[in-house]
Structures are given as C-alpha cells and as structure tokens.
Amino acid sequence: SVEVEALIRNGDAEILSRPSVLTVNNRQAYIKVAEKIRIVTSVANPNANTFSVGFISETAGIELNVRPRISADGEQVSMQIAASVTAVVPNEDVEVHDSAGDIIASAPTISERVVETHTRVPNNTPFIIGGLVARDVTKDQSKVPFLGDLPIIGSAFRDERNERLKREVIIIVTPRVLPERQLVTSALPEDKDAFDSFDNELFRSAYRIRAEDVFDLKFITQNRQLRHAQRLADIIAMRNVDLAGSYPLRTFTNGRFPGERILVYRQMYEVIKRLEIDAAVDPHKVIFFEEDLESETGFNVNFLTKYFAKLGEINVPPDSQLDVNLFFDKLNLYDKAIAMTYTLYQYETDPVTVMRQPVPHVETFDCPDRKTWDKLLWQLNQPDEQGRQRYSILIQNAKDLKRLRRAIVLKRTVELNASRASLTLQNFTLGRLILMPTVKEDKVYLIDEETAKYFFFTEQYYPAVRQELARDGEALSNTLQLPEVRRYLPERLRRQGPLEWEAP
Image (cartoon, rainbow, N blue to C red; front, side, top):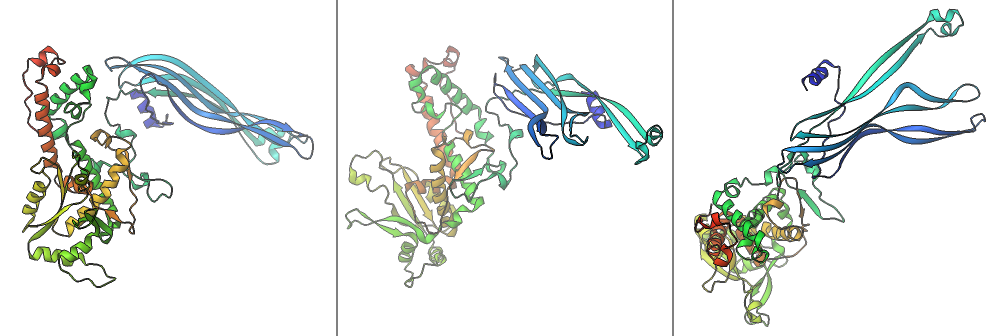
C-alpha cells in the first residue's frame, strides 16, 4: 500500500524478505525465512569444577503455508493461509549461574505469533496479513567503573534507561495465476555458464537453454491457418482416440505442427556451433562405407580424407595426413562439389537392398558458386523417381566440412535428448537442460543417412519446414473431407467447407 511504501522510504519500516514460490492448484506451498538459534536445555554438575551443557536448535523467523484454489474462470484465488513469526525477545535471556554467581550458560526467550485465515481475492491482487505485533522493553545501563557499584552513592555514577518498542510484522501475499504453457521467466536463472554442467566424470554434460538459443517463431506458431488446423485436429482427437494417433492428425494435435522437429534441430545446431563442440571431431577420423561391388558385403570402410586424397589425386606421404585445403583448392579450381547421397530402403523386403542403405552414392557435380550449391543440395535431398527418400551431403569447401562435423555432433545430441522427451518447440524452451555429448579427438565417427539428414535440415531448414507444412496441411484438408472423420466436428465447423491451407 501507499502507507507501507511511505514508511519504508522514511526508514520506519524495512522489507525483511521477498520470497516467491510456485505451486499448482489446490497444493500447499511452504516458505521459510529463518535462522537457527542454539538454546540451552540442561546443565550438569554446575557446582563442580567441571560441568556440561546441552543445547537444542530453535528456529526464529517467518514461516508461511499457503494452499491456493483457483476459480473455474481463473480470475479468483481462494487461499488457506497459516503464518508464523518467531523472534528473540530482547533482555529476556534465561541465565544459569554457578556457585560463585558467574554466568555459565544462557538461553534466549523466543516469542511466537501465529495467524491462520481463509481469503478470496482477485488474481494478481495483494492480500495483507497484519496484527502480528510484538512489544519489547530494552534496558540500557552505563556507569563509571568501580564507583557505579558502590552502595548508596553508586546511583550517582550510573545511568539507566528503559525503552519500550512496538513492532508489527506485515505479510503481503500476492497470488498470480499463470496461463498454461506460459514460460515463467521470473523463476529462471540468468544466462550464465555457471548453470551449465560440463566436464563431469560420471554424468552427462548438460547445457541450459538461453534466450539467444530460442528462435522467434511467432510468424509460424501464431499463423491463423495453422492454429485453425490445430484446433480441428484437437477436436477430432478428443472424440476418437484411434484417429488421434493417425496421420496426418497426429502432426497437428497438442500444439504440434509439421516440421517443428527440424526447427529444434537447427536450434541445437546453433548451440553446438557457439560452444564449438565440433572442434574435437577430427576430420581424419571420420569414416564412411564406400561402395565396392566386388566385396562380399558390397562396401568397404574408408576414411573420408583418404578418399578425398584419392579423388583429388593428391599424393600423401606415408604416416602423413591430407591437408584438406589442398583438396578444396582443386574443387574450387574445377568448380566441382562432392555429393554423398543416402537412399532410404526402409520399406524394401529384399535384405540385399536394405544393406545398401548405409552405403552412399558418391558423385561429383559441377558447382561454380554457392547459389548452385543451394539448388543442388535441395534437389539431392528430394525423393528419387521411385519415391524413396534421399538425404545428401554436398561438400564444396572447408565450411561444408565444418557443417559435416557439426552434423555428426548433432546426431549424437538428438539421440541423447529424443529418449527423454519428444523434440518439439514446447520442450526446447528457455531454462531447460539439454544433454550434450562428450566428443573425443581420438574417437572414430561414422557418416550415415542420419548425419546426412542433419546436414541438410540444418542448412535448408526453412524450405524443409515449409515443404512439410504444405504436404501435411494438404493431407489434413483431404482427411477432413472424409465422412467418417468429418462427423466428429461440430455442425458449425462442418458448414465452413474444406480447410483452405497455405503454408506460412
């Protein structure tokens, strides 16, 4: 209130504590701001030359129990409140003396003031608990040494003063109802490295997501067409559990949308980039399966840089490693780029065909500039003529090799976190911890179709998201026209006709 603020400004009042606590509806929250005080409980053999003293600890401070109940509309909060204020009473210590009159132990007197109440206040409205009053009497004595202790005339050399003090503790409780799915930024730590956890010997490294790691994606999440599609999918999913898990409805329910995992990949990629975790990936220890039709398995294991040396006809002395810049100089000289394309055979029944999935088709393309590189990368990551999905890595310069190393780290990062929670934007939010892999310089890393997928998605993430939105949005529009699906929609929504969809 205005009166309390004026008292604080004038020095007549002070704020003892400003704690905050989060709880859920109809669950108790407990706050304790106190200190421990040692109190004498027993003294043994006070008249002997030796004695022992027993102590216990008592709490002095403020304790508050609150159980909130939120109204149906979220505008009113009922609270069951129990508040307790304990404090040491000045000049009321209990003293224990020995036979000579010396103090051998003392214990303070503790006062306790308790109030219990029920109230109902509007959301975000302060509620004041008052009446916790304490009255203290303090005695101050000053005297001239020796003379002040003399009988009769000693009072002339002493000065005694009694002071009465009245104190009142006011507790202000302000309930705030938080909307669902809203980030509580006031309860999050600052964006400091101290809240990360790296270089552990027994546990995984963990990184706390900062504000700079989270993209502003309101142009997608607040898109009116997308939100309408999500609303229709949620209505159907609530009325038919079987449809809730079917395509394309499952890609729009519970606040999800097609392609959002790609945006999570890109945000994780930015974390890896900023922390420079990929620096520990030695390109000379990166391997892949090279196609070899004369081999029984159909492939051989080869090191990437050794393959570069062979492809570029670069002579590398024994016990030496390729200077990758020499290879990129040759690619630049002839305006070329190297593509490693993985084709997914997940629906094939022939085991020989399935074994070809981890083996990339390596091909050289004309690539005079980065614009051509962008077009090639997009084309090589589209389905082939048989409709089989392809993922490709396209290497033209040293930056592409660095992106490949980051894709290797991202693959492991996704594996660590996908088992803990689904990779949605709701799970990649400010303040959350994501597990980070331990990357060792002497470790060998394999390039596979997953690595190629992350290489592509982290470079052309927006076109890839837009493509999935358009594809699944069209599928949802067609699904909503089916009588067995449309009957779960309210009548007013059925009359609106087909869902008109255009990806953001």
